[in-house]
Amino acid sequence: MTADAATGSTSPFEATRIVSTPTPQARDPRDWTSEMLSVARARDRECFMRIYDYFMPRLCLYLRGLGAAEMIAEELAQEALLRLWQRADMYDPSRSRLSTWLFRIARNLHIDRVRREPNWIQVLDEPERMDMDDESGVATSAESYAEHVDLKSRIDKLPAIQARLIRMSYFEAKSHQEIADELGMPLGTVKSSLRRAFLKLQGDVRGTP
Amino acid sequence: MTPCHHLDPSTVMAYAAGTLSLELGVVVATHLSVCAHCRRQVRDAERIGGLLVEQQQAATIDAPRRESLRAAMLERLDDAVPALPPVPQNDAESADPDRLPKPLHPYFGPSLSALKWRWMAPGMYCIRARRSGGGSLFMLKIAAGKSMPLHSHGRSELTQILQGAYSDALGHFAPGDVADLDSDVLHQPVTVPGVPCICVAALDAPLRFPGWLARKLQPLVGL
Image (cartoon, rainbow over all chains, first blue to last red; front, top):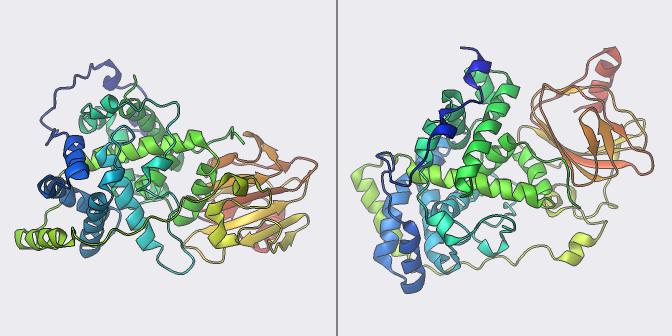
């Protein structure tokens, strides 16, 4: 299969009408927003630990993918979830889905750790500071995020190579060049496939057509 | 400053996912500090990342380990909340033309006029970051109206214009614009007349210059 055929822009995805019923892949359709709001309002430890139990092993997998050793991944995931508890009053569901917020915090903790050498500084994009997000011109209603976006099945509907590249891009500590070398594809093809995939998924996560 | 040339979505995704090289990440952060369009792209890429984390399988952690981590977390819920750092960057500061964008301060200091340029070739000056990871991070100052050697790049290059401007086959690049290039692009930037062009750039791997003159230049340039 040539790289060009693999990355063709036609996708069954556009023709499929997505309905909001959770699919079998959506392992837990729970609305984490309401759990998080209970944590913020009532400092509800049980709610928090439900969030913890769900996200802790998933953050670990993401962090291991970025190249963190197992113990480090656990330590960073614990730290990210502790921040969530400590900053719960900053959580604004109209600005960000809970998983987005957690993802940013975990990622930045990871980068900060990598940069803990002299002259590397903390990432400036303060992930806990929701008030600094500028979201002008983007739909930010609470409803648009409350919708269950089954991204996993949407990724599965992308051309196979795009789906693979998306997963590699988010879950493997590899540069685009390393991905290109590993798959035997030109760097330009890797980038253009990722570009197409991103533009398709972006429509979904923005809650706009 | 409203940039016209933006980051490639593939770069945005790698940055959001935390997989971009540290040097390229500094240039991305510099661009984001002036570009609302790309900041929104990063937010979208973070949403994709968050949903992927939410919808993926859980890592296997054996039961006793899971229990001890859980107990440790419960114990830490009473920890003091660490203070947030003050809101960075006020408008007066960012309006100061001598002030470099904040993401560059750890590597080049805060002041444009205090930079200690090193001669590289006629009309070309360079400062390498004090220290970085595997790639290279540097600032370039190129005299007005100068033509750079034709070159392509071994891997990825990101260049953000801070002052002055240049043109090449891809267009006109002015302050705030970022050029997001890979090895497929062979280009020959020409700086515009008037002011020198100052930019910050990061490379994943060395530049490749075609031709004997450029090959002679390469060790001199040292990029």
